[in-house]
Image (tube, rainbow, N blue to C red; front, side, top):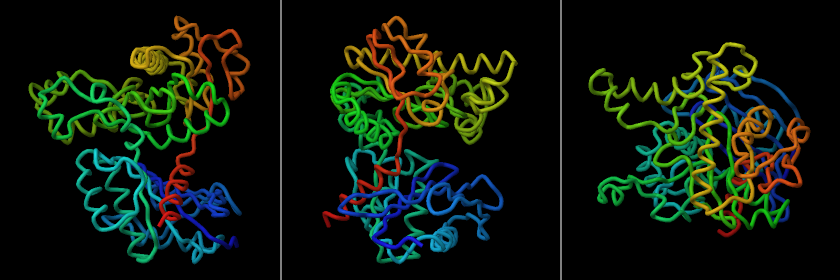
Length: 394
């Protein structure tokens, strides 16, 4: 059993929760365990994938409106391997911070009310984070909890970039581009600065390609643009989310086709993207193995839209020095990276096919005008670091 000064992180998605166990030594948070609760399984499953043991455990409790019993049982399982009495703080990923939160905060009643008020802007993700916050409060009322916000990294974007061409009053009401995946972008920006300081100080586009996918344009370490805007539906196609969509399509579905708002919402979030375009699978690995033309077309659409977004963001930046691939697809699927980069040859981006094949840290050739990197992301590390900074400061 691992003893010491521990910190937990909760990274809530729409259907899973990633849990990080960190040991704090000399004001640094070092990961010693990593787990995941899968809410898609029945019974619920808890996986410990990194640490003193690897296991897959079914939970006796089930998820309802509250997660009190789920978190209680999870703490009990973790307590078989870690000294849970040594947990002094918990950090949470909260997707939407709106214009209220520009950095991490310590959670109190007022902060919870503010986070709850933003639920309407992130209906899939915000409630899950709030349920976890309330569950930890119920289990350990005195435990310090901090929140890190996915939107905070993008508050450096200009009003011009954030504005839609809609009546100005709507912008003042919060109808604007916020940007997401900010914790991942913050980690990659810091990691690129550590690995390649010169590249990090230039014009960089980071491609966070996972089940949820987006791109971010960064200039000298600061966000200037993001493919995701008002919601996590925006930008490039994703596993089951549509990406950019002509609003006339929505008017047609809700008008002449007389579909309900709930039906359209379910289609946009859960039946579109790679799954919708292929009619086969939401997973690029399955599609790459499938010989049906619909599978190939879905992959081509995915790569075409990503390359097109890179071109748009190069305009925002006024040039491009580097591109970074990260997250599950970006880190592990050379076929996808090769297809995207091939569509960007006009930027004089040239990749080394062998380096790309083995997911090397640098996949561009020495003669390429644009450097291309593959860097694994770690949102939980950023959550832990930000939580520690707030906790230590207090």
